[in-house]
Image (cartoon, rainbow, N blue to C red; front, side, top):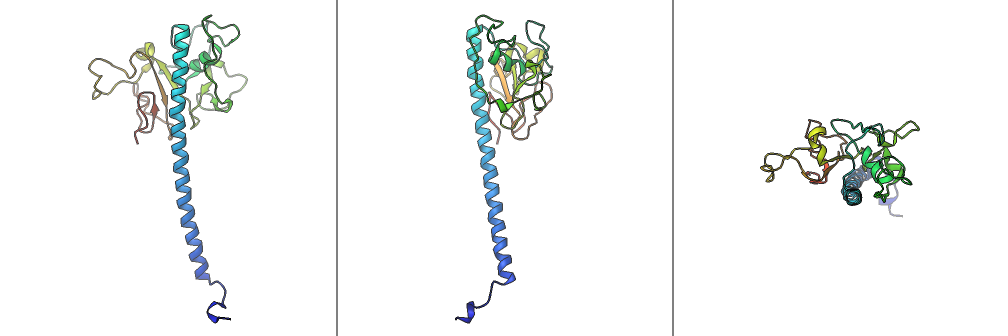
Length: 217
C-alpha cells in the first residue's frame, strides 16, 4: 500500500471540506432566496393585472367601479370606508359576492359575477390576521404574495380618501393631479410590507408594486 494514502483524513482537511460546503451552501441559499423574491414580485404584478381585468369587467356590467378602501358594513347600509384609504375590503366583496354579500340576489341586478377566483388561503384582515366568525365580509382583504393587503381606491375618491399624487416631474403633472386620474389605483407594499404612509403618497416606497409602475429596483 502506498504510504502516502495510508493515513486517514486529517482535522485540517476536514475543516477545509466543511468550509467549502458552508460557502457553497451560503451561495445556494442566497440564489434561492433571490429567485423566490423574484417569483413573488412577478406573481404580484400578475395578480394586479388580474384584479384590473376583474375591476373593469365589474365596471362594464354595473356602470361604476367598486367602492374604495375597507369598511365594517355592507351596502345598502351607509358605506364606512377607512380614511385615508387602506385595503381592498369593498373591492373583494364587490367582485366576489356583490356589495350586499349575496351573489344569489346581488344588490345591483346588472352584477353577473363573481369576477375573480382567489386562493382561499390568501384572504385576511387589514393586519393580515386570519378571518374569524366576527369578521365582516367588507373587512376581508385580498392579500398579496407577501401576505399584505392589496390597497385599492377608485378615482372619484382620490380627493376625499387620499389617492397618490403624480410627482411634479411627471409629464402629465401639468394637467393631472393623480396617477390613473380617471380609473383606479392598486397598490402592493412589496417585499418590505410597508409603504410611504404620508397622505397622497401611498405606493411610492422603492419596492412598492402598483398598477401605474413596477418595483423601482
